[in-house]
Length: 441
Picture 1 (cartoon, rainbow, N blue to C red):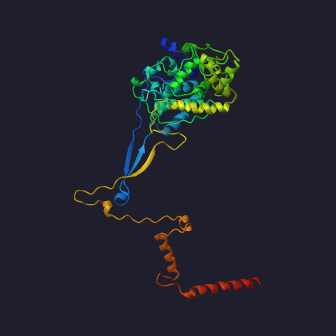
Picture 2 (picture 1 turned 180 degrees about the vertical axis):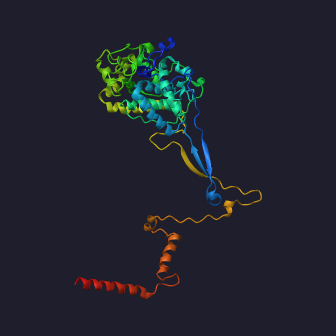
Picture 3 (picture 1 turned 60 degrees about the vertical axis):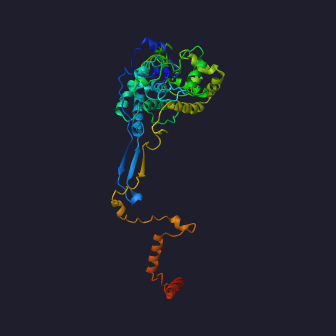
């Protein structure tokens, strides 16, 4: 899939080698590595902690250590990068190739391999030459040229996160669903860590349905997810000079936008909707591309159930696609923090105040300054509910306040208020009532 998506929006001229051409347009071709691009690696932010002075006595106070856990990527920089990607999409019409970039970086995942990064997946490996030169990744150099200036501008994010951010943003900006993404993916650091070639799907296998299952089942995806992800072919074009599939140009692609040419799966190939399923089902236009793997989703009995559903119900397609895309973007990834973080939540860096143990006495038994100094008493915060329900005991502070008010009226713990105090009050009240009555009359 990704190959088709990529070829559709390539904006920069590319001259693929024979080995690159031979590996056809793949259904969502996935990640690979490239050293010849000269892309620079940048270290991820390290974890650090900061100690500040605290108040209190002995073990109760001690020093407070502010511990900040730095994620693999900085959330603020990711948000800014997302805005930059949106601007590139507005001027370059590169939605399809950015979708393909994210897919191909994660699609090398093998669920049968536990070790990272040997298992492949979303780890930024596609920036290295050994993987970028895989036949299924033909044309993705153009995507890297678009993305690299953003990486240079925001060094606090990883390539793995940037690739997936670009892919999800492209879908959303093309009118697709919001993808429930999480971030914090760790990058591999050397070309030797790239996955082997051959893990991405092919566009024209001898047994299309079986091939799709072989590739996507290896990633841990099921039939519904295979069909939903196939729907991303509503974006993009296939170019015969790169994949061997499609026409040089059609009435839908001869004038662009972007670099003209190629054959698209849909008439509006920069709009994300369910027209891919509708057009394949109706077979209405010879200028629209249908690869063997595309036809399989309406021919295979299990795939067909979902394809028919999505052709009739775009809302159902959007829901299933968003879930499948998010799952694909996480395949094989190593997250820091382990649970990842969302850009819609608070910043990923957690700050926790941790009380350090009280400093031990020295060998002479001398106490520290904190041990010998009395901390100033802090007033108890007033909580109304504490004193108005469940007959809870009053605090010493409140008792002192009530006693002060009582003594201000002339009372004391040893001496009750004078009896005529209440009598005087009653006389005053009666007098006021009498005067009120006279005025009323």
